[in-house]
Every structure is written in C-alpha cells, then in structure tokens.
Image (cartoon, rainbow, N blue to C red; front, top):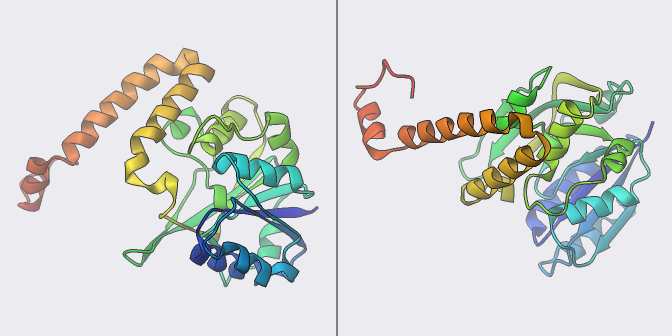
Length: 262
C-alpha cells in the first residue's frame, strides 16, 4: 500500500517551511510527497527548491482556488491513499507515521483525532472525532482533513472536490461519502497531526460563507432533510446570538446565569 501526502500552498512561506520540515522528518516511511503551489511570490518557491530532493512532485502555477489546487494534487498522486497536510499544518514530531499507516486496513476513509492549535494564544487541544458520524454530525461538523487517509479511487469516483465552493468542498465530500455513498470508514483514537486555526475555513469573517455553502449543498443533495435542517440551524443561530450578546456576557461575568447553560 502506498500513501501520497499532498501540501497545497499560496503565499505562506513561513507555514510551508513548518509543514515541509515536519513531513520530511518522517522520510524513513515509504510515501510520496507532492506540493501544489499557487504561483506564490513570497519566497515559497525558494523553500520548495531547498527541499526538492525530498519532494517527489511539485508545481508552482496559478490556480482558481483551494480545491482546484487539491484536485491537481489528486491527479498527480500515485498512492492508494491520500493525506492532505496543507501549508502551515504539521505532522507531529513524535508521531510514528509508519505505525499510523499500518493501521489502515482497506477502508475507504481512515481518520484519526487531531490536535488543533492557535498560533496567537499558543494553546492547543486534541479534538476527538466520533466513531460513527451521521447526518446530524455533518450538519454541524466535519472529519479532519489533516488526519484522514482517503482512498484515491474514492475521490476520483466522487468526481474530485467541487471547485464551485470556496471553503466547504472537503466537508461535502466527507458528508456524501458517509451519508450518501455508504463508503467504509474507521476512526482510530490516536493523534499524529496538528491543524493550525489560521486558515481560510477558520477565519471568523468566513462564517457566513461557510454556512451559505453548507446550506446550498444540503438543499441540493439532501432535499428530504432540508426543512428540518434549516429549522434546526436557525434555532442554533438564535442561540449563538443570545450567547454572544453583550448583556448575556455581562450577566455571566457577574455569575447571574450559572443556572442557564449558555
């Protein structure tokens, strides 16, 4: 079994170096490494050339977005499974990637838990993923791209990631694979990678875009669930607004809302 690790990058030289170094640190493991760069002019290409002996394939050229870059990587990959470790994210130094890969036993998707780190605060936490994700889970969350090994054939047969969306095509793929296509999957309670919350999908200013894209996908692909989903998410949005209101935050600070779990 062969694994292809793909890194996409656009004008993130500092993050790219961190990512590449974490991956080539695992070079005793048999995998191929691909970097897809979006014609960066910030020194990213110099970093790629610096580590070129450790890279099996790379390209730096304009693309039309994140998923166009990912699809380029998928098309070039020759592995049975694909793992995306995008610019800025890392494989943990203490991880034994060969041991991780050895736990893949033929499922379409094998996903692990993942460390989520905040560069600004310097804090991190391990996110635990469910053993049996369902529609309700995917309506609110996704599987960890940086900790999921996906069969290349599954991605190809799915039609690659949709390039019409800006930030949710990986979520849509995971949801459809599990809830629609009955793909096989396995969760392993272990952590080998770190995701840094400084990317486009983690940017709070993109929250509405993320919700809009998810709403459109569910309406188009899961019409029987759409009305229930929409009502449910509207109520969650109302609760979110209540929780973040100035008056509620002030009362919580005074300890006057301990009885109310907001």
